[in-house]
Length: 251
Picture 1 (cartoon, rainbow, N blue to C red):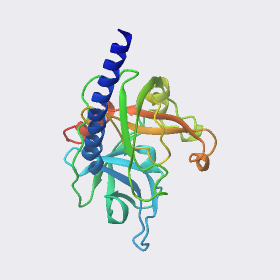
Picture 2: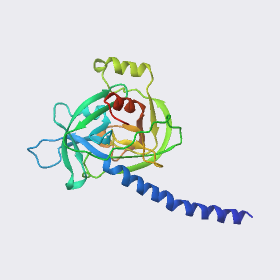
Picture 3: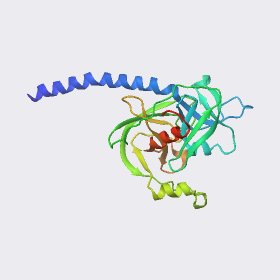
Picture 4: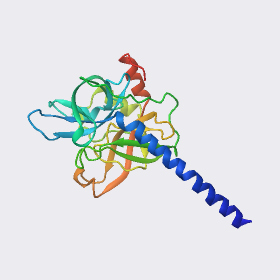
């Protein structure tokens, strides 16, 4: 009897695996065209300048969601998004229109481009153990402009604080975020600096359930490649939904 049950279980697993593989292929095909690299661009230079993170199209397709710290990393340089991949990527200027400091999110508008927009999840927050995936540009463009897909689960739902911020740089919104214990998803999927701002999606339907926010690096950023911690945090999507509504866009 045990042998029969084992054979049935193996057969069921083999029957399910191709379907799951097909769903991931479909997920990547659906989400990838909406994902952009966020960085700076100097028109006087021919190569990619500095890729700071990832973003994705929302609303009417002329707006990009990303992490606010990615936008601020540009400093005074011209903020741009890179649409496409490899040598075929096209560069467009962007302007920040809404920011949410407490949840580290920014909404940008793109000059001259319209992309397929991703749908934001409007349901309750995720549960621990739920499967998720994210697409972005790990370590910027060190491997070229080719977005990579990672899969994992929500391993914990935990308060998050940005201890790297100097006390003198704290704003009222950031202080409230610490007091209010902003909740983040801790993921077991390995990400790297450069994935920040990318979409965290539900593999079953491609809806965006969060925004990749930060990667825990054990020592220095330079060691992120050879010493990845495997710990990634993402912000739940509800605050981004409110940002879009504030800008008069449909989530």
